[in-house]
Image (tube, rainbow, N blue to C red; front, top):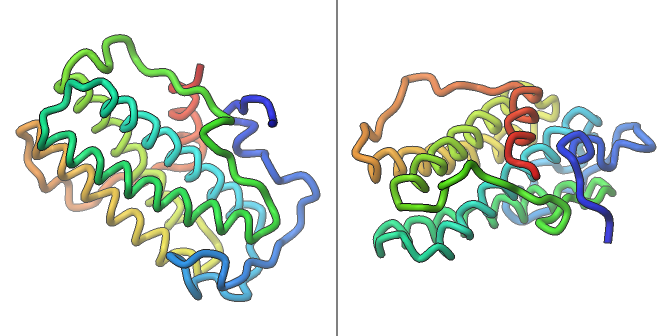
Amino acid sequence: MPGRLSRAGLLRRGVAGGGALLLSGSAVSAFAGAAGAATVPDGDLTYLRLLVGVELLAADFQAQALASGKLTSARAAATKQMLADEKAHYRSLSTLITGAGQVPATSDDINFTYPKRSFDSEASMLKVATSLETLTLGAYLGAVENIQTAQLRLPIGQIAANEAQHVSALADAAGKPIIGRPFAASLQIDAVSAALDAYES
């Protein structure tokens, strides 16, 4: 079992050896045909690893929120759905990375920490969840903006659409407008990496 990864390690993981890699169109069912016979450059693989880290963070938080026992039944049901979505996103991204001959990070590789009192109440969990889902959405939009492999943009955009639903659902739960700005913020890779670092122990 490899040691725990820092955010820099998460981004570097698998870069050794360099060079463009071939990604099979059958690499993942959710991305079926999206990257068929596409050569994926190292920069795109770095983005995929970053998105894996974001998904692991979101899933970890949601699992701990559910385990707290402090969510109402409606909020718990929505959190379970979000957790299932994050796991589906993670599986798809991980299979893409594996299909490119590299090893994706897992929940065993990273220890996440959260601000004090994050799990004290449903309101505190909603606040942190909103920050994490906004980060996740921004990370995916940054990937759509910057990824070079055209075949990956649609599936990554599809995940971004789902993450936008999460942001909207959390806004509704907090009594805020469910429709946000007309142009959601796109976060660049360094900003996402730094944000992830804040949640690492």
